[in-house]
Length: 121
Image (cartoon, rainbow, N blue to C red; front, side, top):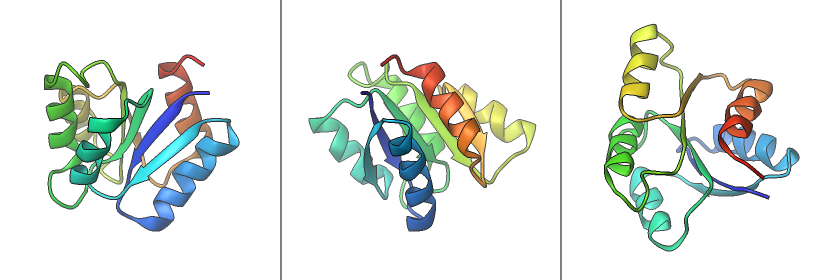
């Protein structure tokens, strides 16, 4: 089954996201910051990334843009998750290279639909 990197600094949110993905059969790796995500991506290539927008250090928007500009990570689909739910926030997230943008509180069906559309396997 596919491996999903979850980048989320709030433990409760991380548990909801990883729990939902695990129930659907995905393998998950959880990190709490953009720096940890970059470090993890040096040694592993997940099938997709589910990432919070508000993170310690670089924001999810910044990290998304950085990953999409890097040939080694540019092909990894990214789902941004945020409490920021205006159309402008969603537009900006997609402009940074995100494949999908979902709002918090996370709805399990919406998260699974977004990830399953992006990941084969």
